Amino acid sequence: RAVNRYGRVNMREFRNGATRLGAPLIAELSYQEGDTDFTSQLERIRSLNPDGVFTYGNARESALILRQMRRMGMDQWFLGSDRAVTQEFIDIVGPNAGRVVAGYPYDPTRQDPRYLAFVRDFRHAYGEAPETYAAYAYDGAMMVMRAIGEAGLNRALVRDSLAAMKRYDGVTGQQQYDAVFSNRAPASLAVLEAGRWHFYNDAHLPTPSPAAPAGVLDTPVEFNGWRGTTLSPAALREVRIGLFAPDTSEVSR
Image 1: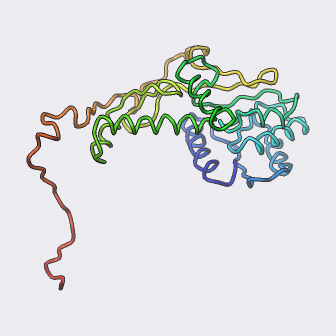
Image 2: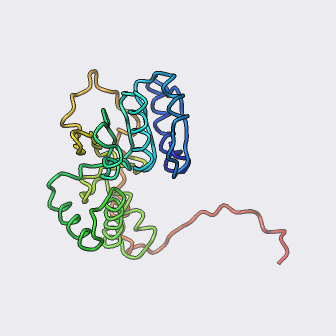
Image 3: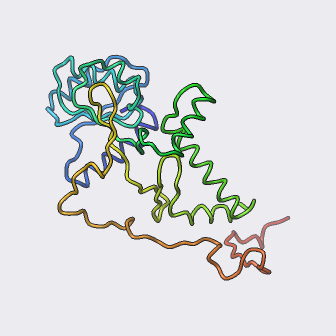
């Protein structure tokens, strides 16, 4: 993983998840952004004979790691993050990529009119196609604008309006939020096949058997925001606030 917040925080999620599933990571090695030689890390990994190699970092370093893996005779599955899903990655790796898959938050090849219009307008404005963060930033901004339109220019009510959004149809698809406001919509798998990224979602995958038990975050928590209260904000005449603060009776003024 890259020695930065992106690599550190995200790898922690996969490390914890793998441990909970009973298949802990057998080694975790790091590199600096801008590195080009990963021989020492790969030699250590090769000696452990893993089933797969997972990287969390930018497209350039991830592609160089994969290219050096294949040159060293390592033919394991290569698992990458969404930042690897780029044309730059494909160009650096070359034709001998082998088995490559990466997680991606949505399917950028789908023919959704809303998404296609966003891509068209983004290309017109910036001269290139939008990547993951551009699309999510757009959806986030539109959600805030919708909340302001519903609640007005009041920060507390805007927050409540956002919290009440259980679903949102954006350029990245339908978003579904759980009790802690995490998007639980199905993600996609980007598989590198014949020099191109192909995207698969849960509709293309077999149903796991037995089905995984429902977790605490799978249980919906109803919260309708201020719109579900008896009185509208305009009808309120009194708001009582409890204050916890240090005793200032002995403080000289």
